[in-house]
Length: 160
Image (cartoon, rainbow, N blue to C red; front, side):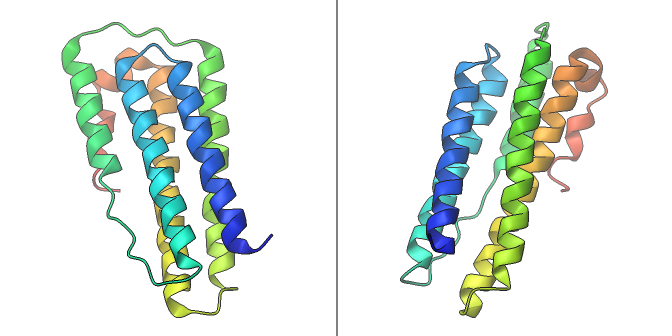
């Protein structure tokens, strides 16, 4: 399997995992974030698929700004949150997947022949890093939902 096929498989697996996470949470905000992350993986998949034969443009992402808006809505709703401990483990697994994807893209950026492929792999690595960071915030939220939202720790998402 070449690196593009492997990357496409990795992105498809990430999309599927996020869609599974959507089904495993009852919180509308968290569902929305995981749906966004699944759609981001679809964009990555399409970019890598195009990269095999042409010079694609990587779509810009607003995932962190969009997640910040969702966290704001969650805070303003006044809803009480109660997350199961097993959810944290599921989110940590997603975080591990994102870290492995980031590492893969950084490593493979040095192995591709075309400069545009190298640049896109590095951009994909940065996207995976943002997903990792977002998941870190979700893990903190589920670990201590009331204090995390009340302390507005999510406000720094866009700065990342």
